[in-house]
Image 1 (spheres, rainbow, N blue to C red):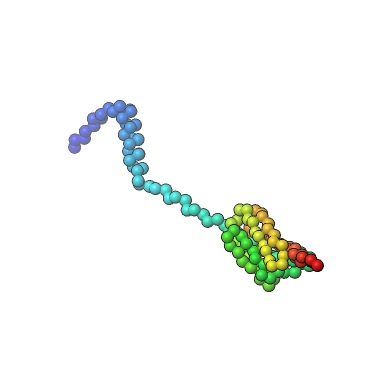
Image 2 (cartoon, rainbow, N blue to C red; image 1 turned 30 degrees about the vertical axis):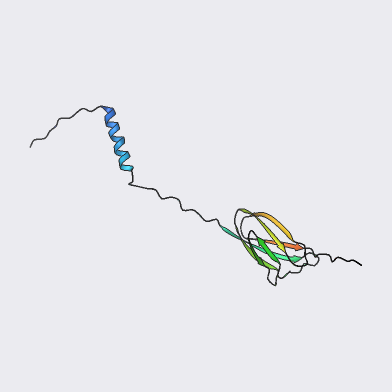
Amino acid sequence: MNVDRTHRRTKPGLTLLALCLTLTVAGCGSVVSPSPTPVAAEQATVTVRVLTRSQPQPIHGALVRYGSSGSYTDQGGESTVAVAAGEDATIIVSAAGYQSMSASGLVGNDERWTFYLEALQADLQP
């Protein structure tokens, strides 16, 4: 059996260049790491309760606004608002016969906000 045991001497720089090219070509398109999937912002629910200021009674039908959305309070004077957790929220409440009111705050988790609305004074002119 004939075995060729001759070795060719190569320059060290060529060996390194060949190795780098092999690694570069091998990495071109073989494995692509996936892009991270965007995570949706967690939602928090703010339960808004609207009461009269003088004698705390629920105000039915008060408008509760957050951003471009709005809802009305139920018989118990409550409504819910969905907001992004970890963000500032401004909620505006208004009701016929009462002064409007707004409040802002950083919403962490589900929360309860209570608004006490002042009744409008009737203009008493003789």
